Amino acid sequence: MKKKILSVLLAGAMTAGMLAGCGGSGSKGGEIKIWVADNVVDFTKEKAESFLASDDQYKGWTVTVEAVGEGDAAGNMITDVTAGADIYGFAQDQIARLVAAGALVEVEASNASKVESANAAGVVNAAKVGSKLYAYPMTADNGYFLYYDKSVISDPSTLEGIIADCEAAGKNFYMDFGGWYQTAFFFGTGCTLTYDTDDAGNFTACNMDYDSDKGLAALKAMVQLASSSSFQQGSSAGDAVNYAAIVDGTWDAGVIQETLGDNYACAKLPTFTVDGQTYQMSGFNGCKLLGVKPQESEDKLAVCDALADYLTSEEVQLARYNAVGWGPSNIAAQNSDAVKADPALSALAEQFAYTIPQGNYPGDYWSLAESLRDSVIGEYQGADDATLQAALKSFQDSCMSYAQ
Image (cartoon, rainbow, N blue to C red; front, side):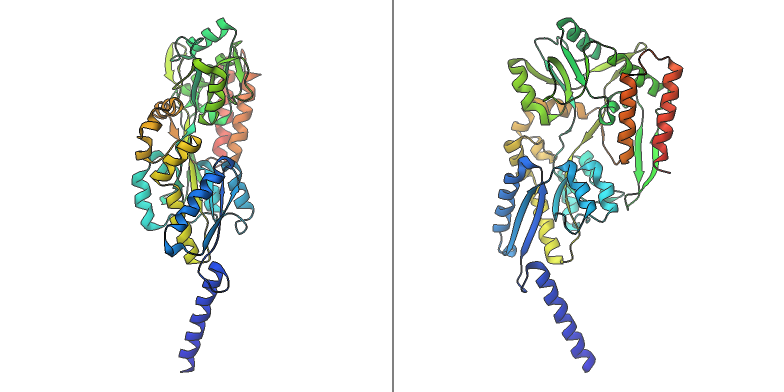
């Protein structure tokens, strides 16, 4: 009898503790902290509060929305998961380290199949580590394409034509040769650079063939472009001057449109020719994801899952596009008239047909790729094939070492 009473008392204590964890003083409800980029703080707060007010089951729950960009969220979460946001936006290349740090919980099972069928396949794959879905797709607009001045560029389809027009007009062509952008050349010639991860987010293998004829063709194309008087290293429109073409993303559409005015135009990336063979520029495509961190309270976790699901729904993705121009990952939202009429998103969508989803890459890869960029612009000018091939072998050996 005493054992039975003790069991009842313990169960009651545990229940009270769970309720206290949810909202304090034993009441249902509590605060949910959300991190998103600065330009969608007000939008997110409005949508989140509307959602919580839409159903009595969420009564007592409140939200605090703070400005923490996708580039900073992962680092902050990993530093202190407990103090971090309950729901947060992040770039897809951070997912492996977030899972490894215990900062993401798997997408709730009843939501997972719906999420996978409603969103573009590449974005869904980017939200997975191993076979498990760890985040809610929010956008499919993280990629790059060509912006150009149509009064200067007569044909945006070839890199050679673009460079000739820029040189003739005394205008600049901007492109970043860093790790994210240099894949436009390497993937364009057919090279591979991907990393495999296990379900814990650890890098288990590097799949790479830059040390090849394909890699040499890509590196020669970069060296050739860097030798043009019109070439300028960089892809930030806010810092670019006197340009007629720039490889950039949707985030700079407004700045570029203001600069080019009536001559504003967009297109997929051009082809490039090396040693008589023509290739289509490729590169990465990426996305923004919304993650939920593990919770001690099952009640709070359920509310966070429901809220994250809503904030990435077709309805909210389309509203977010209308508010700030973020390109949807939701297939139905992508097919809306407004999204399809957007010049930048249309060019990006066309370019995505030639790109690969950006998976998980070690942090050291990006620094190594920046060193390659600097060498292309500097020491590799005028280098022979043997020198370039040796550089590719060294680069590949270093990249592969990160997964050993």
